[in-house]
Image (tube, rainbow, N blue to C red):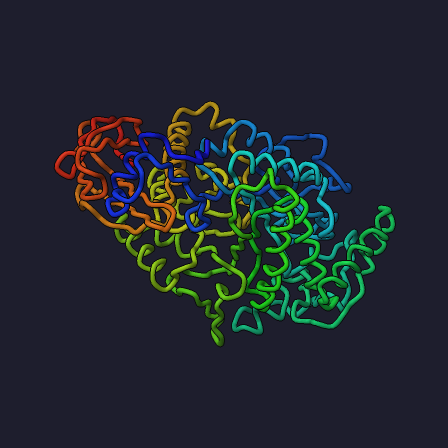
Length: 551
């Protein structure tokens, strides 16, 4: 469970650790554990590759041609995610945010990228932003998923694309040259050759820099008329543009369609795809539309509102590194995406930083997040759907991977199967298809070693979720050998300290806790469930594990 209030034992430890406030506060006043995006534990999955909850929707639009290995639809859908929510899978992992690949209707045709014929199983090739792709599910499925997640204290990030449409195929006409450019292909040498171009050949680039009014693409007009909803869609667009006063430029059509889902279903935030390939200012425009849409949903659905946390956006600025602080360098121009709607960016540097020793890694991130990035955050990851250089490509270091991802300051992104050592190499597959094998549920059910690995991820994940100090508290090394450190968080409304030991000796062990816990107080090891008493600024535990998570 994502406990909203701390247990009695935790309350005692927390209050005793907050010496400065102890005299002023009545004894045993509950501190509500706040949700903080900066400390969140995000679970990211390819919708099509996670879990097949409805086999009746596996094939649509005659998508039945032979594809390259791992380049076709494999059945995963929203009902599959709902099924795992119902089973408590994400709660057991300590996940408090779900992010799944886009579920809007994809192109119907097939594309040969040179790596084998490919369908739009990944969700990034939109054909129609106003409806969901039946391979992924229905709007009712999406509504149910978000409501169920919220009932468990889990938030939902919707993956959104504004930069481009899907490729042109014999079944998918181009939107038109008033909506998109079809060339040149990006060369990524400077700002211009990164933004005013197509990411790759045959991926039409939306004219996000255009303010002139355009009419709807013929492909959508004909599609909606055939589906019997043309008048409704046009009327909604008229209302939107009349109320906002925005020009009928391509980007604002798409933003309207995306924020409709926020207003209808209570999407908590956006993960923005290909953010660096457009003008940064458009992301502030998107946020300015999405944030009030979220507040409208809250007003209309008070029984589902988790708290007063505002709408959130995290950006995929490809190759952004935390060491760069707030700036992304195009070569001839630097841009601050944090000043343009984003509270956080995906951190592409973490997978290499994870090679550092624990203290070097943790202290680096503590320093950067409290200086150059103060008030902002990053989303760290060790593997993803399109990064060919994961930290542990052969899954030989699952425990170290968990320790570094889940205990480093910042937010953590668990890519589906990180917690089960899912393979990152598919037989005969090429390119990013290797990273997208179907979730290894059978292996998790039957392999004792995978279950042991999964249990380690669960213990660290639930500790991170229940103790935001892990992600946003100040880091302090207490002992080099054995390696013990503390994280302390003090805000106006919440204070806590935790102490963590890694690579310890199984059996009896003594850890210094310094002044982070009151002398004589009882503390609990989340990893083993054992309790102990603080004596002379230290605790002694006897457990068969090499990890201690004290609160």
